[in-house]
Structure formats: structure tokens, C-alpha cells
Image 1: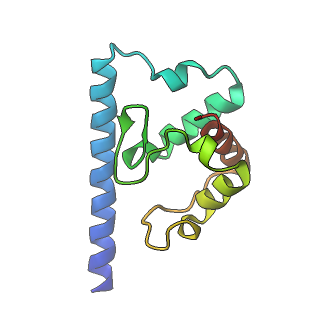
Image 2 (image 1 turned 90 degrees about the vertical axis):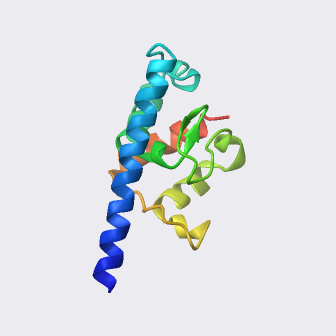
Length: 125
């Protein structure tokens, strides 16, 4: 029974990833392949890397920034005003600290990528 639940969860996650990619493609087409306004403002290489980590790890499948992304998880618009860097780091490493029932997986990338992702999220004000 437990194996079936795990398989169902994995299939759901794959569906979310596929939907997120499709939504990103659609948004790209609708905006004439322009990057979202938040991404256009990034000049710092650390913020660029943080945005890349956000994209590579599929955060947009569940979270929305601007008008792009999913709505399963909370919006990340203004997240840099809501939490400080220490709290964002804690949430990324152990999402259950914020919501014990979350399905968000803990961040498993490198320390450098974690710092870049936190910096990027902090820039979303």
C-alpha cells in the first residue's frame, strides 16, 4: 500500500512538472519570449544564478512569481519583504517548519546554489 502511495505521489509530481513547463512555454509565447519583469532587473550574477536554480529545480511548478508559475504553493510575489534570508533558508531546507502538511521537498542542492536561491528570493520585493 505504501509503495502505491509513493508511486502516486511521484506521478503527481511528474504531472506538475509537465504542467509547469507547458505553462512557462505558454507564458513565453504570450509575452513574445520576453523574460518576466523580475528577471529583467537581475544584474547581479548571484541573483542570476538564484533565478536559474529556481527554474532548474522546478519551483515554478507550484509557486508563482509575477504571472508565471503554479498556484499549488504560495505566491512568491513579495516574499523578500515577508521573510528574512535566515527564515527563507530554513524554509527551503526544512519546509515543514512553515507548514507541517506541505508536500514541498527540502532543497538538496549545493550550499552555493542555496545561497543564490535565497538571494534571488530576497530580491522579490
